[in-house]
Image (spheres, rainbow, N blue to C red):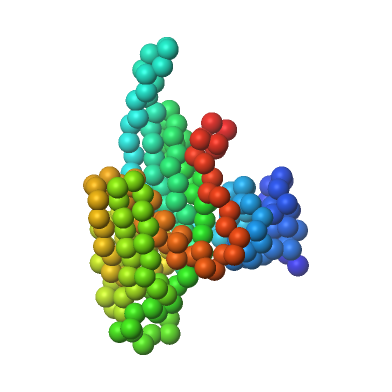
Length: 217
């Protein structure tokens, strides 16, 4: 039984301790445990080498009693390109810090995407697409992801494609409706579509981390 005591990480949650002690040694088991995922280090241990993609950076201004306050909002997706993907927004006074916050929150929002060969045109045994059609919404934007046969590639806009690629989806048709020029809603709707597809595989769903809870830590 492996453990991660040499990493210098001291877990503060029950799930973290189970991971460090080697009782839980893969992400699928961690997500199925029903225990809340509150430590990014859990994901670092179980899914090392995650890729991340900054999808959007915006300057956000807010008037306060002391004057105008400027922050940067960064939209980030993370994934191992093999069935796991996370999404989040992060805010901070500095761009770099906002990106790092978003990456940390995205790890806490990680989901397992059910991949397969869901197109009736396909005879592949390789998990290269989704198992079924799925839809997600965010604001005015709705994104539908439809299984496609191997070799088609991703018929999607850049933002949607980045999220699907990080999840390990190689072939899919997509349809987008609403104000799709709003990157944050387009990315979130795509992630929500993948999350909706994953729910049948996760009997106990945890709530996604609220950005406000983490951003000020």
